[in-house]
Image (cartoon, rainbow, N blue to C red; front, side, top):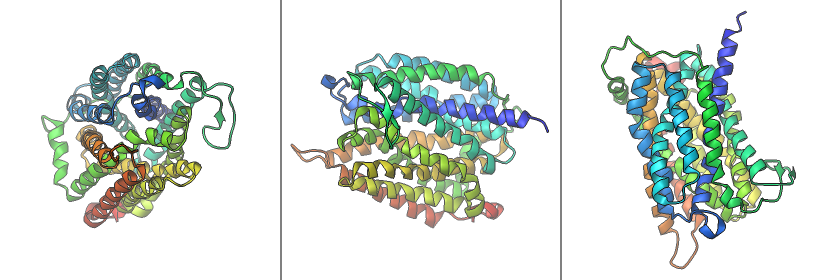
Length: 428
């Protein structure tokens, strides 16, 4: 038996590992670093400013860049070459951002970075789909390595750069020790770490399986045909549900760091603590293909949507023990795998072959473009509402509000998403 399929899957798995290690190295810590006071080593940015940096900047990148990068990957250049270029330049930008201290520089560089990085999420998915014979079965097995990459990057940075004299404990990251002096200031180095990983990843991209452009396309613009998918009722319902969910999904990353610090976690514990969700994601991703075949897309995505409601209900119970709130992040596994990963598989299933890259990118615009920009405004508005004059921010009411939004998204999807005749075997 030829070893070629095994080698291809190995390269695709390592690609996913690096793709999400780059993201996981810095993203869980960003909000905490940006919000911490200057006296404590942070930048002292306001909630509105952080929302612009992590929300609006990401939206601009997700909305604008795919029209260039996705189109090029579909029509003109091999996808792995486009991926290598975007990752390399993005890594250099992220390295430079690590030494910036002003809001203006952070905002501009964050916009530039998102223009470069956001398209790579869809491109890495497209490369994977192009080299799998059974997407429903094999994609989750490849994608799970992205989750592992996120965990490893989060742990390695926290353990070896934010702590000293490591010892064992029963909760993640298992190896812990006293924080180094100036630990909050050191959070900025996570961006430089992401830059180094990006350079390594860009070099590896050149060894990925060749994924040439579809030169036999029947339309001038792939995006025109990709956007035509919105005429399919189920696709339109999925897009609307995804927009709602992506708003509350992004707010988690805006507020999880400050929230975990508020309930008593140290700065060096925040990144590793959030990886509880990634551990759960590994398990759910490993069995996602089985559940899609057994339950169908409708039931699987419904479970994923409802998981957002459950997670935020637990977060709202701020009087619970810290360890229980940390463990409750396991809901993230169902949130991400059963909603977003399953949705990407569904998009690939309903899109024609010559526009699959662009279809993935169009869907990415919704969840990585529209959602984050709305999340920044909603997060800021809710913080103003739930912060009484002269008082402290009420995290409990904040999370309960997000839970209600998650429940609304669940009901909407269950009611309007219906199996289509040509996919009854997998959508029922």
